[in-house]
Length: 340
Image (tube, rainbow, N blue to C red; front, top):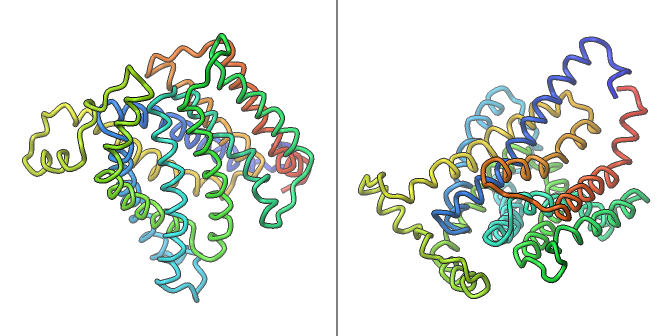
């Protein structure tokens, strides 16, 4: 994919590919942070802390690009339109991360990463509903994805399905809807402004849910997972009280690193790197490299969460990765044969 490039373009593309690889790694290991954070706090509390942090981390980038006149928001997109657009994106994002975070109560980091990646396959299929066209690779990829899901869902003796895997699958469907919505909205608002705004809305909704819905989720989780206890979750209101009192020696602050990673690394740093990298990276490169997010999640689960995926699970991971590549083959093939 590099042979059409001159030396200068080749260096730029290689640098961009390296940044994209770091981005995929940051996003993949973000699943480890999500799982680790819930050793201390509930799913809504985790999101209530990390998404406002992620939104704030993008503010300097927004101000910098605005100062340099790099923001691409159309001039007729006023504040109210921006508010409405970010609210739409933030609402779908909240639903997607809600199901993802709840699902991770029950399933492994690797499973969560690869099942979430199913959105790559679902996106072109859902796009048909709004008039987008798709080709044969989408349907071939769908077949491989369902084979992969079969192996991931089934335990080694194929007798039961982890409920967390099913919940993550619901999340993947909302990620696909989110991708299509973002594709529509970025034509009407700058993508970085859109991201900062949607993260802020998602954080607000998560704060509300942390006070209202999280105890119910904890009770439900205890009913279907006998080895789970919601006693390990410190409520958001208590965390805020501990911060006010300066009681930072409390065990709940063990969640600080996962939350900071989830808010700063997965959102602020990774998104900035993606924006910078995709200025010089051919779309085919970005497609292939960012599909490795699930692989990094599985690696992070093995190294940091002591997960040991079985043979069938690894086989499922392989089929899912292959499905992602096949689904994107039109993009990969076109960019591989067309000189830049």
